[in-house]
Picture: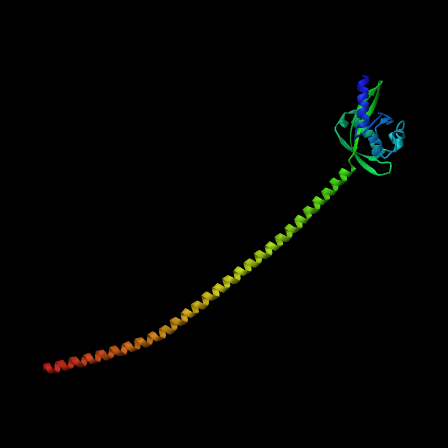
Length: 219
């Protein structure tokens, strides 16, 4: 038993986490380790031993104590949870704690193990703000890209319309040229036809004369 007590004492005082033993109902500190003293901003453990947590104002809000005691009694405090505590500087900080009821000489006490996670929580909050900032930037950039894409698409459509109109104009001009060529060709053709008709007339006339001469010789 003595060996067990000595081992517990070594672990208790050497632990990097703050450890305290206090009465369940009054919150009177019986013992605390060095890590607990430093965490709450006291000079040494004698400032805490024999005093209650309400007198020392170590609670973030003293009104939270009954809920904490109920949590301990129901065993919920065996699961790590966060709670606010007040540093001696007056700053409100946040601790991660695990607590359980122990019995000494027939009396119930609370043994709490606490760790200051204020900086961690602040870092998490800052990280969350930064993450939100990045999300806002991404949304803004996405909106800008969407607007730019729509603008480019509109420009492409306008260019396609212009190119289509230009092609239609070229087709129309080419058609007009073909019509003009056809008209010019038609005029020349008419002249040729007239010449052909004239030549045909001459040939027919000569043929008739030759036929008449043959008939005269025959007679």
